[in-house]
Image (cartoon, rainbow, N blue to C red; front, side):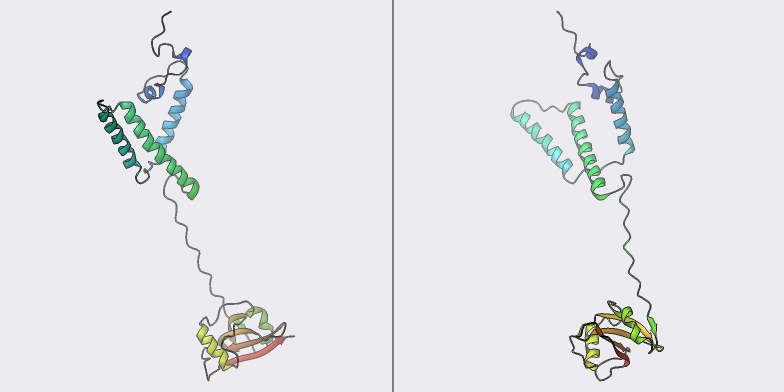
Length: 225
């Protein structure tokens, strides 16, 4: 029995291996290739709509080096170098495919928009400085909650230590809270200082001129116990 010519009965033998090449050349599908050609059409449309990916650094050079090595091996074997259209097609496909995979990986990992570079995320705005707490001398014993755990006020540890020494406190005293206040109309800093007794705190309010020999005390009460 005479075998049919190659490709003559693709519907009986399955899809011919050159179907993708014929699709790229604009040929019509043969019997049994309709679904394959439709899938290739969808792929081409997706690739046309996608942004052009950039090959990872060194990839193109590596591929070209591999082709050069293959040519050198052919010359060493005595065969003439052959660069067929199919080989060119596979090299190009490898470049595009690998670069596209890298682009997809970047989208997944970095959350980038495939239509463009990722939008820079705005740096979080710095927390606004709390408004000073306005107090009177009569209010000062109730100011414990306002100052406890606070961290605004005089941020210079050296100046704070000198001010504490002026009030008879050790230079290494660390307040358990501080808050900018206005006491009886004068701006200052409220320091909540532990006394060594459970639930007993010293509320010390000092003005901006507090320094060794000049305590600039605006208020000083002990609360709790």
